[in-house]
Length: 177
Image (cartoon, rainbow, N blue to C red; front, side):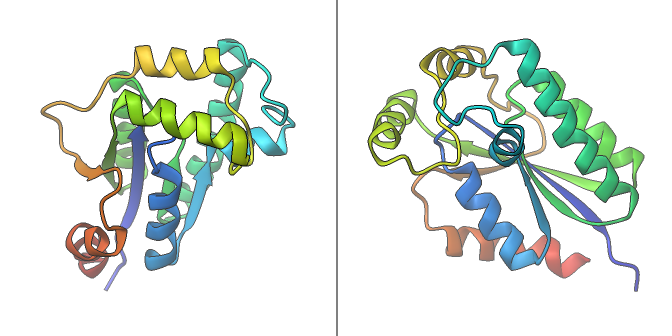
């Protein structure tokens, strides 16, 4: 039986729990995760919480996409934790998956803006991430985020039990492979 390649595309606001969920999926599925924070860290950006202009973010997204394409071309399933906050970007990623014969699965991690801001402030104190998001970069994503509507996607509510959610929503995909 040929294994189906799956392209898990995580979307949601920063600090919603996308990376935590993505790592759990990666572990359960035994597949690689591509994280924007890791790309930024490797490129020395966001380490001191500095502002990153939009044109630079484009470069980081292009690098993450290059890595994803390499995996998809090889028929390798991946989790993509790169915050495609615009519908057009999610559509583009779905098209990439289809181009490389992978099944795109968009997972929307839902959280309130108030909880995002609370978690961001907590992170400023704890420094729990590889990078620190500048307040202007955070505001940009919050005000420009387009939640999935009416399109095929799974929803994970921030704070939900990850293990139970994985059993209900991800293992059925794994069993189809």
